[in-house]
Length: 271
Ligand code: HPA
Image 1: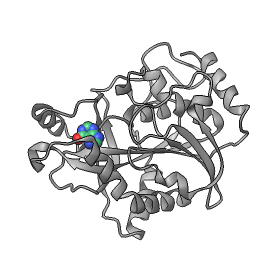
Image 2: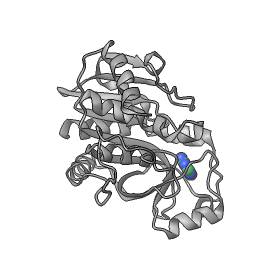
Image 3: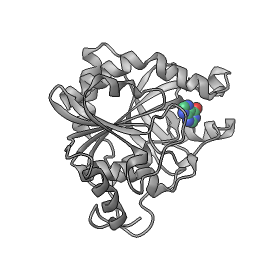
């Protein structure tokens, strides 16, 4: 996809709204409820945007919801595009690019993730301090779109220090025992084998999932400030003895949805 194709999408959005968001929030599996708590000024279904890929993943609604939260202009992606659905990497990151073109300079990414760290429990929130992208396709492969960013994107500090401090402070205020760690993105859709689980843990990953890192890379390419939070929905089989399944991942996300919403709300107020 080139810049012109992006502009086509952007123009299509601009025919529907002139909303200029400050903060973008990408809502992961089972974590979409947050969008209901904002003062909604408008919604745009992905299917109504020219050239836009439509999410087919369960638990993902497929629309932008935008409005106000404590006076801040926010846009939520209710439903993201996953690589495992068969979309290309450029399609996966298209929404992040559009949100930046609309004006957002900060983004909070959320996801459901499997816990690799033996200290983690189902329902824990883990703030990403770093990531491993090596098992996911790098979304910046291909001709660089120089209107968006440079050819070689620095990834020394993928998750913004200032935003991470805000997330920590908010967790403290709400008495949430926030975990921190490294998230590894895999393509999915199959869950990890025992050898893959050991490999990821051996590489220093604390949680594993099928999203987020490609979006972080795209956001950093454009110079956005990024923070990300995983909801630990299952613990890997070698620790828990339980095989992950989609229903449990969704249920664990939903079970935590109230606290998660309160947490995100507090963070956005302070971003
Ligand atoms: N592995 C990969 N992705 C996931 C998992 C997992 O165990 N849980 C939720 N998303």
